[in-house]
Image (cartoon, rainbow, N blue to C red; front, side):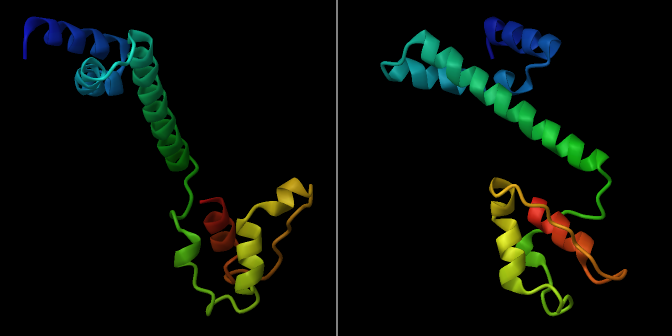
Length: 123
């Protein structure tokens, strides 16, 4: 690593630009080998940093939500919750009810999987 790379790494650390610190060199090399402009290079670099920040934000918010666990619809046990037909749950997962401006209410006694359905649909 040369002196300029070290200075860039130090500046990125001070500015908390973690993704730029790791991605700038390969992206600069790729930009140099193609006919991309410096503006293209900067845009791609900033897009990568923004994407990394959004991903970290989602991870932090998910952790702060203190959900009982991250589950996907594929992991949902339809045999356990016989009152929630697969087709109906998959319709909820499509989120089409939002476009139709409809409400969804999950009713049932404790322990039947309402929370699992809502977590799986959101995930």
